[in-house]
Structure formats: C-alpha cells, structure tokens
Image (cartoon, rainbow, N blue to C red; front, top):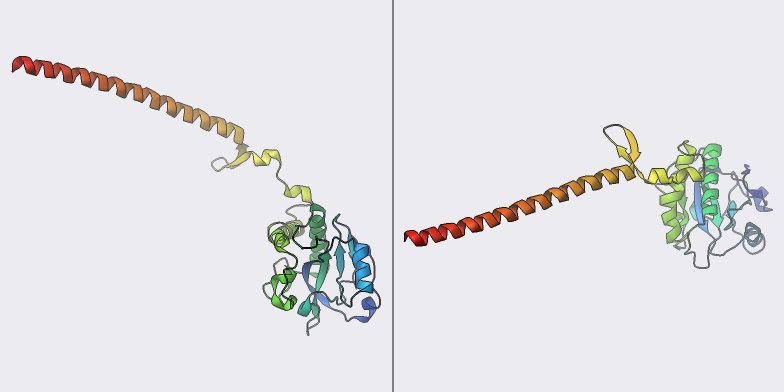
Length: 252
C-alpha cells in the first residue's frame, strides 16, 4: 500500500488490512456535505458507517489519509474495485451542508498536489475519465456507475472548479508548466501586456493605449478640420447661389 507524504496518516482498521488490493487508475473527488476536519471524517468512517474514502480534506487544506492508495476504499460505487483489479482513489472534502460552496484556495492547492503525486506514484494519466472505467481524473457525479444514488456530489460550484482550475492545475504542475499555485496567477505586468506579433515580444499595454489614444485624437482633429472645411464650402456655395440668383434676375 502507498501513503501520501503530504497527508496525516490516520489508518482505518480493520479495513486497511482486510479489504482487497487495487491498482489505482483513477482519482475521484467528493464533497462530504459537512464542514468536517480530517479527524471528524476519520471518526465518522470508523464509528458510523462501513463506507470510507482514501483521503479526507479539511477547509484549511489539511489532508488525512485513512487507507493506502493500493487498497480498496468504498466511496465511489463501481469504481471502488473492478473485476480486473483496477480501482479509484477517493477524496472526501469538507463542504457546507448543501454542498453548494466552492473548494477553498487551500483545498484547491492540496487537491492539485495530491493529483500530481498520484500521477507520478501510480501513473494515473492526465486526462478526465471518458467512461466509468477509463483511467484518469474525475468527480463523483461524472459517471452514473460511480454515483448509483444520482446525487450532485461534489456540487455545481466544485464541478466548475474541477474543469476550470483543478484539473488544468494538475496537468500544468505535473508537466512542469508551473511549480506552485502562485505561478498560475498572472502578475500586473502580465495583465497589462499584449503580444506584439510582428516583433514576437510583449509590450507595455499602457504604451499601446497611449499610442492608440494619440491616433484617435489625431483622427478627431482631422474630422474637426474637415467639418470646418465643409462648413466653409457650404457658405461659399450659398453665397455663390445668391450671386447667381441675383444675376439671373438682372438679366431677366
């Protein structure tokens, strides 16, 4: 069995020794629908149910591990252990009582780090599970076989985070595109820069805006001057019309 060094080991017995081995091929995220610490989650698994997850995650990002990742845990329906011996690593995370809140920043960081470790330790591929048995990353309601009760776990807000933040973060971290959470955040310079496709470099957006403003001002000046010229031309035409009219009367 494998134990994640970034989690507090809180081994559940007899499950840890009595449940069959698995080959971890998936990482599936859950919300426990309670604002629990990892200790409280451990106590619930130990005292109140015959179910359990491999990991528990508190609001502050603290991780507890209850069963080694190469032993079956009973949190994800058919994904717990398949006939070929493969199975899912499960994580239950603290949430509000409606499972409607997003993961905290600390929870997001802990999930990303754990996801990278599972990829490196067990070779879980960097993709979202395409089917219920497909190796990769997912969340409880993603496939019906994982979620026989058809509930919304881990909740809509967290599903969006999974697609927008967590899974991309795991991929980026695992492939070396970024080394920590701060690297994912753009700096003010990044936010105010643009790609100069001709020169192949980033330029100061403030300068770009200033140059654009100068060009707009020049166009406005040209329009103003043209309007003045048109007004003067109209006055000349009006005067010429009056002169022609007067001359016509005299001739007639």
